[in-house]
Length: 505
Ligand SMILES: Nc1ncnc2c1ncn2[C@@H]1O[C@H](COP(=O)(O)OP(=O)(O)OP(=O)(O)O)[C@@H](O)[C@H]1O
Ligand SMILES: [Mg+2]
Image (cartoon, rainbow, N blue to C red; front, side, top):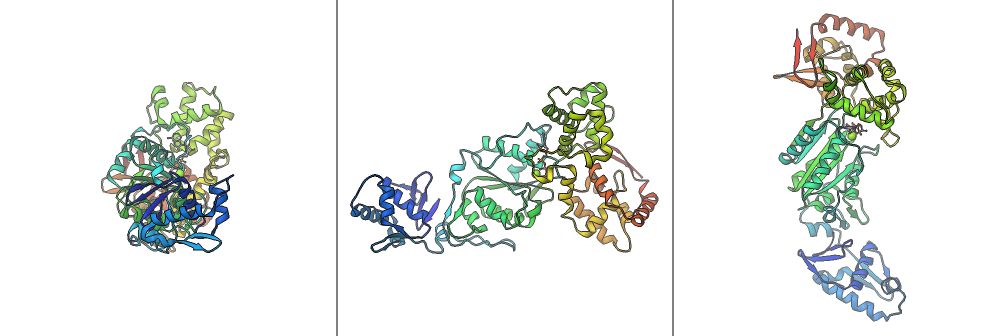
């Protein structure tokens, strides 16, 4: 909607409202108004209006004056916003606070980093039209495998909380889950749905602009501010999906907090490798796909989500891809070694389809060399297994990198105190280790299981292999290895990531 004084204009629907009541305006008067609006305050020449509004017809200039008069009449007290430049044409001049005046006081700023107040210009928002069609939601995506429970849980979380964040390791399937939840919401709820992909390399400033673009909010002459976005969605029912927030996390947090505080009808579903960390955020840690466990027979293995996904992807490459009792056991091994992470399974399935499953199993020793053939349409961070870890790694602090490479010697679950003993050193205090462990866990590089009040940490195998490659200093490797021998070995883990955790000391 464009707000001019007390009236609201929707150019796309060609409707005008005064205090929420529709106004009647003739077609030609509306065309003239539209030309004035689109000129963004610039002069619109009389001859251009006459040519566009009365094409192929020669009309007297007083026809134009009649329509300008009816527009001024409609604007009432704001009639002077249409200015005449004698002998030349007309301009629609909007006061600097036009948007603010029409939408009430600006919302308070929440955190620093972005301007929160509304700015000069005119906001155009097609949110009303969005009800018919979700905006930006990828229409085609393959079937979502093994996420029935997750979908239900996320939908339920959205009922309770205005901001739900799908958190988890790279390639674990946050975006796909988010898309499915948004798709179901668009079918089953009256709220408009808008999907905004933030996963490009554009900087933080791009967050508000990306949301404004997706919501089709246009500020004539100025960059849309956070306040403009807030004002444009005021009073609307909207589910906003913010996909891949991790690299613009501070700006995403500011936006989320501001939007949900100011608008009751707004729900946000964020996906990120780390929590957005704002008030009223509900985290949903996306788990790996279900993996085969010890003792599973042929049927049971074939039913596990990770196996189904692997087979589905292998068949997408080779429709004749089949399995028997031997190869299904090998597929189970691949799924476990790739931690049930869909992206890794997808890359592995492509390899298996061309080389065979046995070859793939032996190649997994060198997983970063072989798991490289991502979809050409996928973002760069998902083209190879290494790229997806590189994307997470670049957000780590120096201390987090040190701790990650040192804990890579731990093949299994370990509590915090064991980590402190193994990785602590003269250049890394116990406090720094604790901070780094917490940071790594929140950035989905360290996984954890809860054992009552205590946490047990572990690394996905791909993360462990990746981090170990960074442990290339012989002295550091020897020191950490020795401490692991001394303190780490008693902590052995048996169990599975999906089920109960058992550990012994
Ligand atoms: N449940 C699933 N069923 C089928 N394919 C899936 C599933 N989950 C993810 N995938 C596939 O795995 C790949 C990675 O998924 P997705 O992009 O959702 O991961 P992500 O967690 O969002 O990763 P990133 O952290 O890089 O954003 C995609 O190609 C997607 O098609
Ligand atoms: Mg994603």
